[in-house]
Amino acid sequence: MSAGAVTVRALSRVGAVPRAEWDAVVDPDAPPFASHGFLTALEDGGVVGVERGWEPIALVAERPGADGRAELVGAAVTWLKRDAWGEFVDDRVHVAEARAAGDAYYPKLVLATPFTPVPGPRLHADPALPGPIRAEIRLALLDAALDTARERGCHGVHLLHAAPSDLAAAAARGFATRLGMTFRWERAGEADLEGLLARLPTKRRTAIRRERRRLREAGLMTTQLSGDGVPDALDGAMYAFYRMTADRYVDRAGARPAPLSRRFFALLWERMRPHLRMTAGWYGGRLVAAALDLEKDSRRFGCYWGSAREIDALHFELCAYTPLEDCLARGVDSFSVGPGGRAHKVPRGFLPCDDESAHLLFDDTRHAALASECERESAAIRAEIEVSRDRVFIR
Image (cartoon, rainbow, N blue to C red; front, side, top):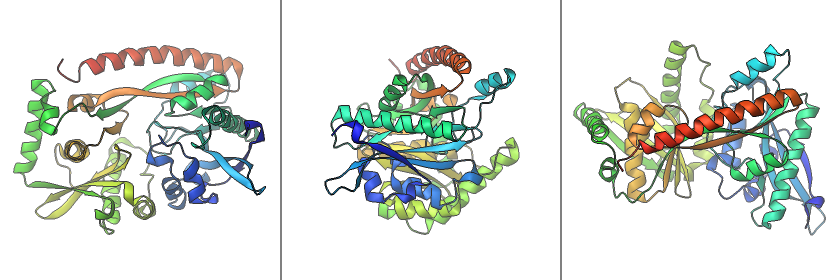
């Protein structure tokens, strides 16, 4: 097979592709958010769509099969966007520069997972194929994304929270690379949470023990649930907690309303159950808070959390300490908690890690300015990551 035999076509939604076919070509290293189940939960749950600011355009790469019918060999999800909501890659500087020059920045075409800033492959090629052919398929998908963007009147294409394989394809097409920062705990031989705390500076581990002790003394109990052990009825509770917490933030910060729907959570229970990991918080026998994560191949990913009550340090217990205890007990290799919040995450043992994106603007002058800004910003982030990593653990 050569990549010349591959054609790429655009579909209006991931759900137009059978689940088994889509998942068969997803990169094995991809987080669970690249799966058919998760992406169609976004679609069928009403989280994405033209009116939601995330218009899906699924690209599928095909070749003639042995029976002459088209056979799926690659896939990518692109999104037509008119703002940066839900991307977690701040492009306000680039937008302002374009406007100051009298140019347009939006609409744009984005390859990402909506409201999910987890690094991973965006351009998927059948893992059963040889490496060079997979690389060519990724390039074919990226070229199709560029063509689609131009046809739809976009001013650029952006691969967000991308994998090295995506970045290699993007570099071949002249994209500029931008470095961001995300946070992750990585197993380093600790047997339990106390072993992890022992690696932290004295002041930090003392503060963590104090936080946990106060919660226990106040009557908090936590339980860890997974897969089929997560009761069906808790999808509604999870949504309620998520919505209550999001609404409190909206009231205070004037942010947009919570994007995830009740139906979306129900579909996660239905389509992603083997990957579910829930941390539940109880007071007086009553469920008052929960955090929902997804897990795949010994990698855990923090996703959603919420509570009916505002309790000091409750977020850290449900989103950090109890999940870390569970990861250590079960031999999980890593726990990713996303970008932002360095002041809270680094003191709790989460390492700052690279989170790279790639950007191409169709206007040559604007692209040159963007590339220069990305280079300057990436150098600053690189230095910040190195300094921050040195401060996480005792050496």
